[in-house]
Length: 278
Image (cartoon, rainbow, N blue to C red; front, side, top):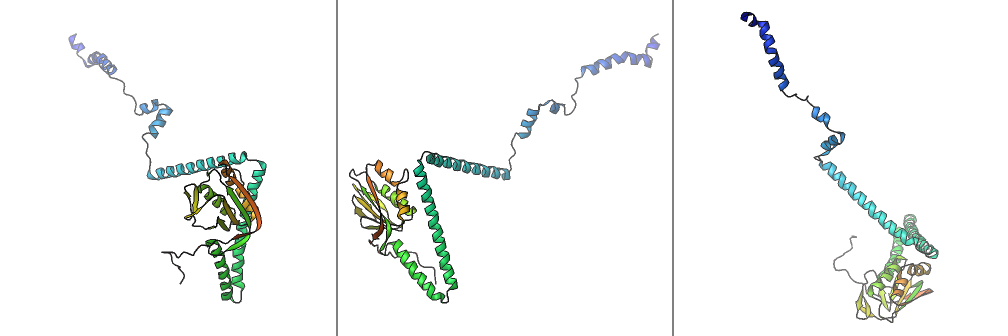
């Protein structure tokens, strides 16, 4: 009987339960890749994006896009400010501003046509040397007027600023000069002092100095230019006249068909600049 139990078939039946129990005791191995399959879509997205891998080219593109966006934002903001200011202006003020813009455009167009005419005259003239000398002489007179070395006369306006309170400062007069130049002023004189491109205004006690020359109120501006452009430029909303009136100054503007600007400046020899023509 014992010999039968020791036969190979009996041994297998005896050992079978031990093998089954041993295999059941071992933990189940998860198939490869099952961890990734259990991740949600958001977790896989985060895992793919982090940590960031930014190349140099991507960083440069990002900086350029940021700069472009910032510039557009600033431009939109400035345009919005200008639009809001114009939105609050009166109809007559808007018409005046449009007329001034049209006048500036027309001046630039006239200057362009004048230069084209000079070029065509030089090209078509039989004696180009004589024509060149003629144009050079005319140009010299024009530059002399701008430099203040030559007296000038022509249509324009006279602006008088009464300042009994002593509240008008140098920067306000300088703003008036800049506004007049933008409106096409060709020659300016203030209380007998010629104003040129290099002129400067400074406060001097209770008065103002122009290029070191002390001037007192009332300040009398004599300006040569197109009166239809100069006067509106001073009276635009928030412009020269309104600013001075807020300082309790009185401003009077008169048009004239003949303004004489006869204060002269000495031609200054430059210390370093020399002509590049041979």
